[in-house]
Length: 548
Image (cartoon, rainbow, N blue to C red; front, side, top):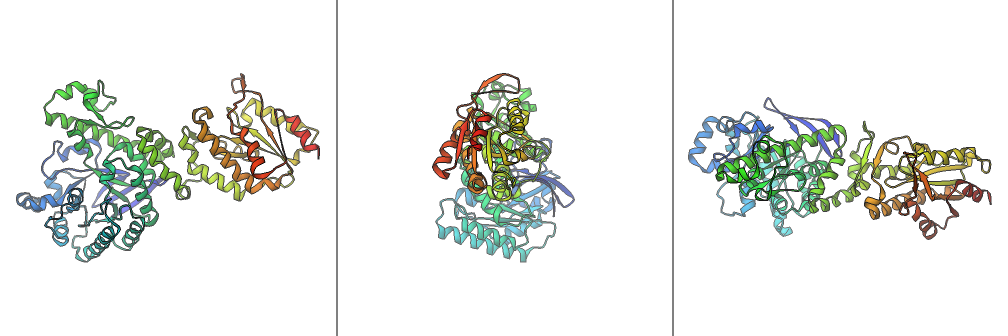
């Protein structure tokens, strides 16, 4: 197997996977198909964009007629699918139904997968249940690692590219151990197991915590697969956290329950829809009441087709967002789909360092900060850290003037331009002794000499009124990082809080009472006891500086 990384954004990456003269782009989805009972034939799945499918080798192995047929035809001819095919060993049934009576051994089922020429067979692992005790989980992890090592010794078919399952459930040290052990073994794809029940319960925060724990510990040159991830509204958040591949039967299982995928408001019961909010071929051709009137098999088929169209459309959207460097913007839109997705974003906030280490130094277009989650972008996290550690004020500056950033950035604002002109032309204090910075809602302190650099000069942001509390507090925290490091560089501080300003449309606007610059007074008094003055005009600040 060859895996080439073509582009990245955050921990998401576009890759080209080549196996047995077939190609697959990542991130991507393996739709799960039954070995012989499907309302959508596997041969039709390429019409929806599927480059790969997943089926169950255990079911084939236990059905004598099917077993004989697939051994004769091999899996691709048997399923009539010429793309990539992955096969499960039966561990999923054991996991989902906790069936301890399954009569199968690793040697038989793994050898069977090689005989039917699966592109991506899976070893017979022992998935960890979320409610397993630590001792039980540890036993399962150790046994899976043991089986993985035995699998390598038994292999006979060089065209099979094995999935190496990683387990540990809620236990991070076991996840780390499982990941590190798999690093040393010859597996083509790392696959995180034991999370389907978490997906079904919308426990996205736990899922991302597991994913990031694995991502931090596995070697990066192979794809990470997540067993059972099939909800398209979760795709972008999983990809931004490092998921490359996923498989699921959700498209058909939800359809059997009359559930219809959407990206804006989650899954919907078709009975509650008057119109389809989609333009896929199914939704263009039929109305909800028409689909509800069909017999069950046809109704399920049509809903499953829509669910597939939507799933692959979302993956295309994600890949394009990676190419454009807009994956964070997409994630912030998608998590509004469900409160548990917003809650899951807390995991991103707790792991900003790993995201920042993968963030590109520069992107081809400016950033859009359009939600409260935007204040936690890794790009901003990097800027705040580097400003505190790498930036030094001009050596001759003794006085700091802090200007509020207004409706447009820096000198592009008519009012700010007039303030800067007044500072430059003043006869009260030598210009070289004055350092000017802006207080930005999202970026905190921006020195004037950095205002045209990326990202400080290339972004658009919502106003503070939309998400007042979170922006206000976060902005002051970011400003505090600057003053904690560099306050001693200045003798006096001037804070400009105007009564009115002229916006970009030449309109007089009353200054925002909830702008974070209004909170600097308390910060300067409470924490730093700085010598400062607050004024609504530049001249008063300059006179304060002069009165030494």
